[in-house]
Image 1 (tube, one colour):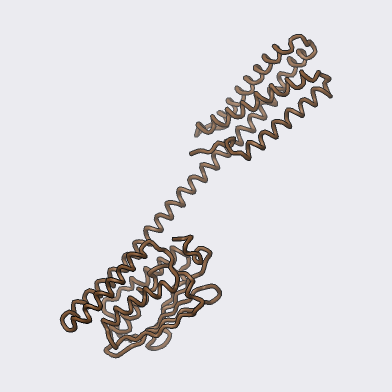
Image 2: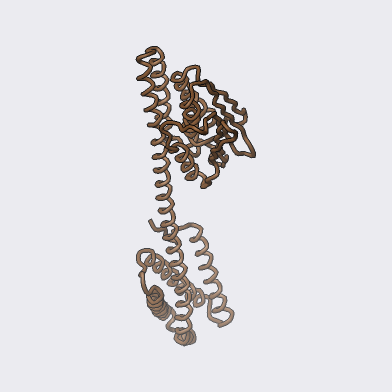
Length: 356
């Protein structure tokens, strides 16, 4: 909906002050410079200025409803000329009725018609241009808001798509493991199903959360690790160290699970020995830093690895922070792989309630 400039209280106050000053200036000129009587001076100033104010209001409302796409200047020129002429002759007619007996003033009124018309034309023209600028800026702002809203919706849609694409991979793996356990160890299979249900319930609960605290994310990761420990038993060991000052800091929800899953996959799938996954969460210069390390065999390829998990996380981080360097994955030793994740603690990130 278009906002009329004269409907804004601040502009109304400014316009009222300008009108009063305008009337006062002309009363002063008529009375002290031209030696007209007070009634004549006040009547001329009030009537002419009142008609000018009415013309400005009509002009503002008209331009709010209609503006030609082409030849705007010609339209404004014709409109202001017509309004200036109408105001000039209406004011002359009213003043003639009121002071027809004052010959000196009548002569002045007739001689000043051209000057009055020019003053009215200039003032109305300025008013028209100011209103056009106002409506154009408002239209541009509305268009920009719509574009920004569309971009945000598109970004949210892509973020949700990435988050939901990451979850089925883990679910399929877990269901396969449950199937295998039902044959060799039904009790462990039941435990895993219970933990899997709790994990998926937590996933659904957090589906609309963009940001969570480190404490909440680590509780979520612990559920995932409990499931994986049922799958791999004594072969999987976790060494986690989370700095106390990081617990209330924020990060995008469900971001760590695919990274931990990746570490377990590359660490365990090509060996029958026990391995240790190391998780370190620290804070550096108001940036949350998470390092996940896993052993790997550089000469062997993990089964079914597509690299989708890390590429999806990198894409998600780019959509949130417009920075492609927040996720780094590299071999740091001959048989040790490290994934480093950095989350800037912005104003929004530190206030989860404002974002969700």
